Amino acid sequence: MRHCGFFSYIPHMKKLVSGFLFWLAVMMLVNTIRAQQPMRIDSLPDLRIRTWIVKRLDSFEQVIRVYERAADTLQKGRPAAVFFFGGGWNGRNIEQFHDQSVHLARKGMVTIIADYRVKSINGTTPLQSLHDARSAMRFVRSHAPAWGIDPNRIAAGGGSAGGHLAAACYTSDGLDDPQDDRAISSRPDLLLLFNPVIDNGPDGYGYARVKDWFPAFSPMHGIRKGFPPSIFFLGTKDDLIPVSTAEAFREKIRAVGGRCDVHLYEGAGHGFFNQPRYRSDIWPKVDAFLAEHGYVKP
Image (cartoon, rainbow, N blue to C red; front, side):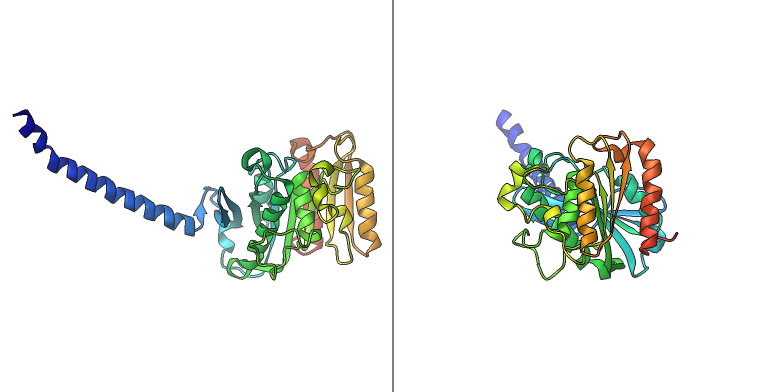
């Protein structure tokens, strides 16, 4: 009787297994669709915010987060800005430029936050961080027509190591992910730099980690004619970037006919730009700089 009782459950078990396999197949299909489509990740009523996958590697899926005014999604020729978080190519804080991205999106720009590989999570070197930054810029530019972006008005910005990546997207030609389409330019048309580590030479920041790719890796050593207009914010008490570095960067850009506006903040240390007492002064300056170059309305 016990055996009969056991076998009486077999049809029910088959139904359960069949049901489980059916829902497993459904979930796999849903995940495949999600991987192929942009996903809305926020609910700000006036903005549309989505993520896109830039590339997939064995242990890393690079994504970007795109912000735009919901009312502007059909407009063409809009300016854009791509932001890279800081952290010494070691730490990751994808939210670092969220507020700034919301702010500029509400002014009519398309703003993008780019993820990239870092040592503490991915076990990578600064070179892979740069590969990913340049991949992100190319991805945005390649999608510019579909997203209503002017491909000749794509700014890049970032703080600390993110500022380095923004500038190196212009200067570090040749330091690319081998799978990138190098026919698509990674060069930004404008730079928004917040205590950036732009000198990676022997007397600059991070030389011991990047010397195998120096000087191509260092923006200070790649300035040339045509360098994009730049705005540079720095605290006078920054323990990583001396004021003299910002001034030298500005003078090298001026020497090739370019423009770099340096704004110094007395007594401020590294990473000061996201502190509320400084942001209230910094962002009107950013807005004015962008307005002067036709990226936002005055």
